[in-house]
Length: 232
Image 1: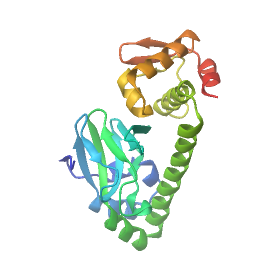
Image 2 (image 1 turned 90 degrees about the horizontal axis):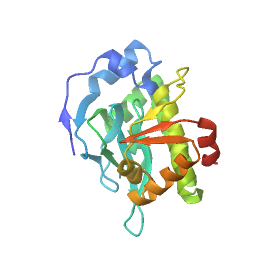
Image 3 (image 1 turned 60 degrees about the vertical axis):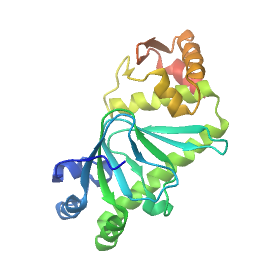
């Protein structure tokens, strides 16, 4: 679960994390001295729900699946994390991991031990504010996900996920006419906490509306407005 230790980080590496992008050079240097790079292979666990928390994980590249286990032992997929996002904020949530994280493909992470991160926050107010913003964003995402899990129909949840990931992969000001997402049916089943068959039926429904086109481990968004209508 530790992953393979990678090369030392540069200031540019630290600055590529959105939460740290506006930090001064001195603050970036403090983080660079304590952060390490770790690589995980597809299917490898990064951290497990309920186990002792170790620190902050920032995703550099690849995709990470975040999920929880329900009371009846079923997986509840929460989200797929994208580059730059924090995949765990245990120093804010307590002594144990609130969810599990698993590499979907080869993943590179930046890791900072929890007690080290807290010392940095106390030592440098700028870093403290940056870490608090990470926590606030995580709380906002978690709240949104819990509402979605409790209230939304599978097809609408799926449509919302496709829209969110299309926008995330495009980035600001880079809207594509027909964005293409590299998702297999099993990937989405794990993310949504349901069966592959249920995802296949939901995708077929979206395809029949003309919102998407299905290929081999890819989904092309043909009409965002139709997809957005299904997400409501």
